[in-house]
Length: 178
Image (cartoon, rainbow, N blue to C red; front, side):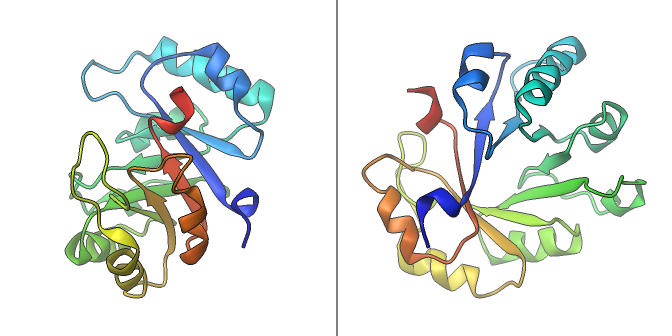
């Protein structure tokens, strides 16, 4: 498996046209900003910039708004424990992404019927000093049949270690902002 064949997700918390223009067309963008109230105009700007570049765009923690704005999907963070996510009418290619940190949260994301589970943190980072590590990450991956995306502590130095895992993608917050 090559790093280039992985599905790549980039987290952003505000509209940065230069960052979006730097991303490859195989990279998807997830907008998540838990510090401020959602700004619909900013989300529309991001959506339009992503559409111009043919990049998939996902909104965090607001499925209803993601459907209304015609986005490619929604990202459900690990702290969202709501079970009524399947009550929405999704368009055909709408994808639900969800994050988990342990087996209990993996089972919850399966019940929420997400398409991809972002399992984190794989490696230690500035924010989280304790990562799962390759072996614990791999053992958690084997507990589900959902597609797994690795998240957390990814740097240029440890990207090669992702080959050891059979996850379908990787996601990062800080890797793309450098």
